[in-house]
Amino acid sequence: MILAPEVETLPWEEQLAADDEPYRAQLRYLFERSTFFGERLRAAGFASAEAAGGLAGIAALPLADKHELKATTTSENPIGAHLCAEPGEIARIYSTSGTTGTPSYIPLTAGDVDNWVTGSARSYAASGIAPGERIVSTYNAGPFAAGAALASFERIGLCHIPVGTGNTERLVRAIGLLAPEVAVLTPSYAAHLIEWTAERDIDLRASSVRRVLVAGEPGGGEPAFRARLEDGWNAQVTEAMGIGDIGVSLFGECEAQDGMHLGARGFVHLELIDPDSGAALALEDGGSGELVLTHLRHRAAPLLRFRTRDHVEIRMGTCSCGRTGPRVRCLGRTDDMLIVRGVNLFPAAVREVVSAFEPRVTGHVLVRPTDAGVKQEPPLPVSVELARGASADEALAGAIRDRLRSALLVTTRVDLVPWGTLQRSEYKSKLVEH
Ligand SMILES: [Zn+2]
Image (cartoon, rainbow, N blue to C red):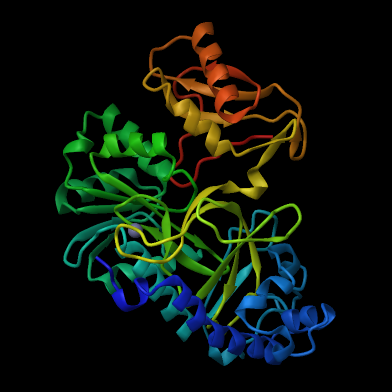
């Protein structure tokens, strides 16, 4: 179902033309209200919004990242110098997990919340879910921005059954008794459910769930990992992706399963850059780079050329579903990327290659870099978990090592570990341990 056909099938060139005026208005708003972006643009030689120009010239403007925003927080302004709205205009404040101390705060006006839900609803509707169907969700309502996606299910016209995170018994009972057609969860949790039900002789393949919507981490788009989920659930798996500071479920995959369409088109502008040089890259079919996003109609704390640290591959052109928005597949966080003797490696790619060895292995992997930082000397240690009852086998370890080298051009040391050794997650999996 295309939720907003007049928007989602508009030729992309026309979308860019339509986005130019809101972008210029957003720049004027930043010059008026944003201490952070006003100062930054002036320092870069742009005295006014007019001087900064239109969307065609966006690549000349400075990039911004999360650390720079965070560095401007004070006890008087815990949100940061990019805050534009007056206190009375702010309707909601989300926070990040704050793994390094104080969380980052993400304020939204009522209009911002509504725009988030509009984009998120388009992204999730792309999966093929239809009004009247039941969806069971496993995301908690707060404090994280992901909770805002929950409102999009009602917007689509679904019956929403929230069960929250971390209660597998409750989830499985809800699936059994309430017979939802759709389940939404992280890919790690979807994989965990396959094992969990198998151990208890519950036939997940026979459940009512025909669509599994995964989000929250990369993986749902990796072919072998996706095939495992689709087989275990006997359901179609499509993925969605949001960026906390920019918007929730900005992207959502359609039934063609060829990358996630930008559902938040008209609200967010998308660019790709080279993560090392910061140089803008052309948006070409098959291109890849770090995703950079700009708000077009945001009020509370709009961001300009925000570095997401997500490395994506992009597909352009009209999709078989009729949508014209660019599609992305997330290859991994640039923060998780390792460079092994000059070769870029995303841990998710290791998992994808190892998945080809199922059912002899479970598909759980853990990359264990020996050197601190990004650059690694080969062989790179990788733990691969064996199937239940299987014992370590030098030939298997060698075959996995050879496949990793030919597919990813990286020399590894494969350690086969017994079943159950690597951590299962009800939320997000850890693929790297330094
Ligand atoms: Zn499509």
